[in-house]
Image 1 (cartoon, helix red, strand yellow):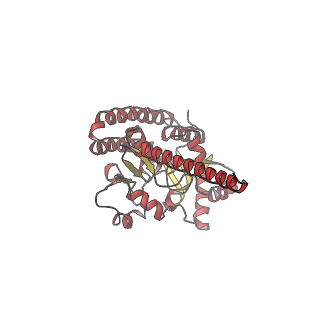
Image 2 (cartoon, helix red, strand yellow; image 1 turned 30 degrees about the vertical axis):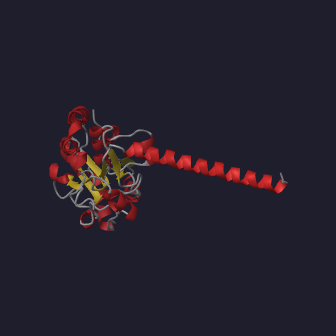
Image 3 (cartoon, rainbow, N blue to C red; image 1 turned 45 degrees about the vertical axis):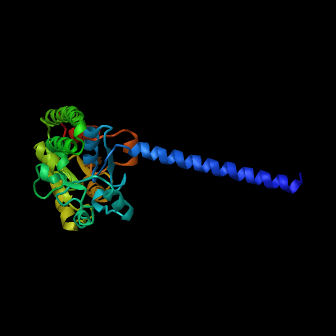
Length: 302
């Protein structure tokens, strides 16, 4: 056989093997995707608190997805076309409501009529148009109970499992609430100073006075007069710590700290979490536990 023919045969054989490998990998990838999605309806949620509660109730029966990317400011988020498409493929879309997601109302009109959309703020206790209601642990319990009922309608065959999972998670939430009640019962100072008005529910639930430098919008810029007023309050109340919301700049808190000499600490409002927090298996329960430790130290609680 001529040398040229042998080379040609080798080339043909090489490409035949290569094509076979590509076909095999494509098949395996498609099969894997099919296994992941098979029999698991997708539920899309908008905040971390909803994601955690949904995962706790659903277990492995539903595919729960959070639409807001890890580490991003949930206040400033707006879905791109790919994310809108992901939401459209879900059987259920649950959003926080109470004005938290300004992008939801125009989006709802574009979603398939066959999918269900739930505004969770309609099922909890909301006050002062503040959307951070999940920081009241009683509201997290209500969220869990609501998801139990909604998922049972979505997948009736798993109703018993949903009830069991919800009950287990609620016990943990009730333990967390008891820890807050006990941990913040006797404190020298009951004033909570934060750079952003995200902790009103936490303060109200635990009988704390809540002072924030800026309002509900995380990108608001305070005036020099506002900062001067907060500096005065910090000195009058003998505040030890100013808290700033994680995932948002601490510039305002640092400015006040320089004027007053107080400590600056991050406090996690659980609108979203960072990739590092996810990798270290942080949850609503663990983060709220860390928040409690910081509050106890700042307010000199016994």
